[in-house]
Length: 295
Image 1: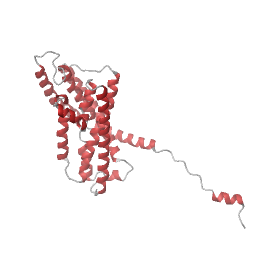
Image 2: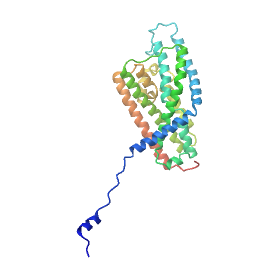
Image 3: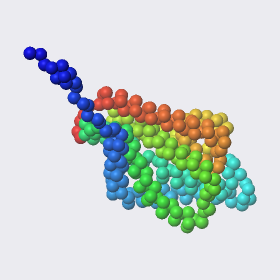
Image 4: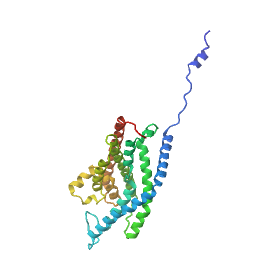
């Protein structure tokens, strides 16, 4: 006996598909939890941050005293590399602020240690993107470090009697904030890519110190890049180093405007993209030869 036509149609119908909620919200909540854990972890070491900030004021004081001596006895309009005395002192204060907000402190060492000691094993077994995970920890560390550094740096400025330069143009603040965020990303991705060398070598400190030596001079930590010879000033913008410190500071001080600002932001974005690709590529290649140990 054949089943009725209606029953045949019903048997052929597939059960309705269950609608899945988009995973975007779950992904955001997951990494927000990582941010929260990062805040808790870094707050546990706030005294170490405070000590690091206080000791970093020693070289800053030496540099300010050096430039005070260079400008001593000169008129207020005297220029050195296009900077007056007040602008030169402001450069180092703003550079210290930018460094506190964007610099990588121990992230590269921790990432390399995670790989070398097998601490990434439990993360590889979880639905977590390790690059995004470390970026969240880096962001939380920068927020805590900047918060701890704010009071000592403000006290230093007040005691020294230095004049703090504050831009009055809202556009300058907007471009500075954008460049500052790109600077933080650039520093993190470069450090992450360097830490990936731990997949191939046991000790990455030599490579980190070599890059840091170039960065300390070529990013404007030691002096503004305007003091370099013309040939080097032409070449450096095509390297990532100026965008790790000098470029956002020059925006804040009004030294980089117009077409130079647009060109600098385009190059900075390009280097952020290149460094991200290098970090991602090194991570994927490193996993292919990773042997899970320890952890």
